[in-house]
Amino acid sequence: MTDPLGDRELATEAFELVAQAVKPYLDTLSDALVHDTRAETLLAELDGTLPDAGDGTLAAVDRLVRVGTGTATRSSGPRFFHFVVGGATPAAQAGDWLATLLDQNSGLWLSSPLATHVETVALRWLKDLFGLPEGHGGVLTPSATFANLTALACARWWWADRHGVDVTADGLTGLPRMPVLSSGYVHASSRKALQVLGLGRDAVETFARDDTGAADLAAMERRLAELDAPAVLIANAGEVNAGDFDPIDRMADLAESYRAWLHVDGAFGLFAATSPRTAPLVRGVERADSVIADGHKWLNVPYESGFAFVRDPRILGRAFGGWNAPYLPEPDEVRVNYNNLGPESSRRARALPIWATLRAYGRQGHRAMVERHLDLAHHLGELVEDSPGFELLAPVRLCVVCFRYRPAGLSDVDTDLLNQRLGDAIVADGRVFVGTTRYRGVTALRPAIVNWLTTEADIDLLFAVTKELGERLAAQLPAFHKGS
Ligand SMILES: *Cc1c(COP(=O)(O)O)cnc(C)c1O
Image (cartoon, rainbow, N blue to C red; front, side, top):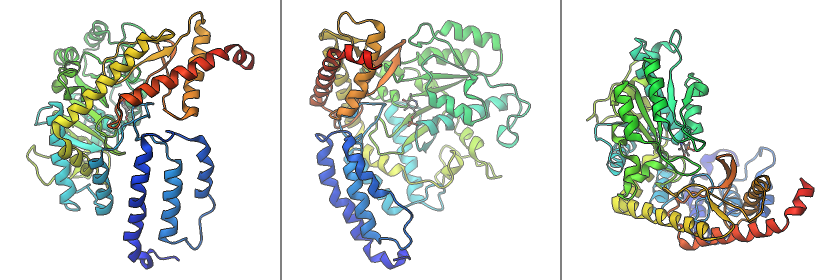
């Protein structure tokens, strides 16, 4: 068994092996353990040396399906609350399969008018969903990290241009350090983007008025006045520990007064715009020079999916049209070459699942999902507040609930230790999945609720498991002192 050509008749059967796994797998999403550490022994079946003669299509795919469905973390299900992880709606998942079947290269119009056209439509629909101006340029990216990279590369192009330098052609040599100002909410991926762009992750100066990281706008303004030079502001829509927002509208005022570039990282928080209940949190986002979000979080599209929007659409082409023929798309351009507008060259047709989910559920469906999650987050917040021994650490603003278990009479040190062990115990238990963070100097749990399948029963289970394991660990507290 060597040349895949000999197996061409088996393509349908190979797909069917996957298709047959769909129902049994999806059926387990809502009630099987989210992660079963005992299943990890199965992983050995994927190990071994590179086969000389291969197993053939069906044997290889069968093994992968069996081990995959047996060991996968059910992070696309309703009980995974760690990080900010969405699932995949039925339409999005089918759209993604179609992207695999069609195997388009969506880098160039020439290689796939289909993928290019669908990307243009999906980007337009997303702008509409979030209330962003139609004239914004945009591009799909693999993630919010790549989207931050894309947007900050545009900011860098603009900034260098104001110094009279074409950074695309000439690089950073001779330029001063690019000033980047943000609140304490700035996400690690913005720093990573700056690091990759040669600007340095420590270029970010943060202005926080307290230990939550909330923006100190007066200090930010003083710094802008003192700099008296082009600068970049990063506003954070949805901080990962407690879901708080920087005041985008007021940062847009600052950007206007000091002629700075305003970038908004709205990886999940941009979805606040889909409901009138939370839209005020992102007021002013339409004034930003660049805005990004993730598809694989609150849009519930499979990995990998993100998007970046830029007010001046020509800048995307200037920052990324690196093919000795800088491509300057017009706003009404149809034959777009998206590989000139972002960091990738060849790229998958990741617009298909986005198109499918937006077409299937529309503005109302996405609003309903977001509002269900808002309700669930408030429900969890109430459970925490109404339960002695639990402490809500931040108001519930969106989809993240930041709290800890704090039985009466425990010292700060023991409380931290207890919550750390509680996070580990919840993951090991497997019924739900949630991890810890450090918030205002203490160890906290911070479930994020963004999965399309999550209902009140899942939230009640999350709280019940947390309480049960917390009480058990608290009873063992003297014992783990000896062990630590
Ligand atoms: C998740 C997240 C990112 C990074 O997103 P990836 O999709 O993991 O690259 C960036 N910013 C914020 C605020 C996030 O929550």
